[in-house]
Length: 263
Image 1: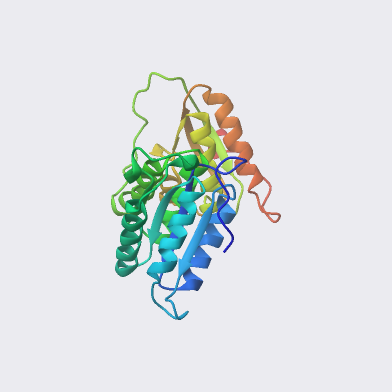
Image 2: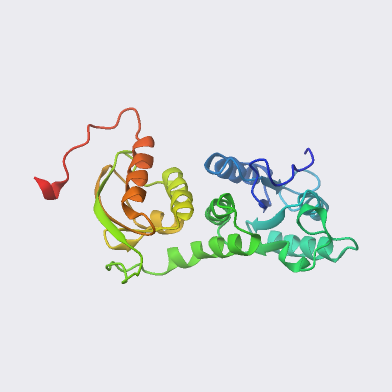
């Protein structure tokens, strides 16, 4: 593959590397994530040295080395346990080499923070990390976002009103016009919007700020939802959330009805 482009010029600091036993699985995860977060550099290494199912430590090391040399911080996600071990060994080897560099090619004073490996569901975790990277986050923040996927899907999310906040809040119904509801694509773009707006969203009294939280809501069809935003300019943020939801409307979506509470 061609050398990695450096961060800047629209490329965030953190790049994401997917390590899989299958080249097709790695390519598929990269394809999905790249469509959701096109500004993030996402690469995949899949299969063994012979092209069959397995892992290729040399190829993984080369990918980590190339991304670091370009000035990126690197978050590595994997599909199975042995791929996790290969990724961990690759990161330790590359960071332990003489001349390991930090972002921009400068000597790294905190080399262990330049590349991290996380054990998360490979598709969901990679996407969550890339969404965080698209907001300009460093590799540690991207790792936290990826790990959140595990807790969000394993822990029961109990409905409840937003906690009291010092920042202003605004509430009103929003219309989800996509017949498929809040699936991965609108959830990813909503998460980036809310991060940019430095705001928090609740939907039907449940937290809905991160991509994982939005997917856990289970909004699987078009319809009205009660939304609350807490942030610096909540009314404007609600307007932008609705505009984003409208932008994801499919061509065959039905005409927007009035919210049920106003009938």
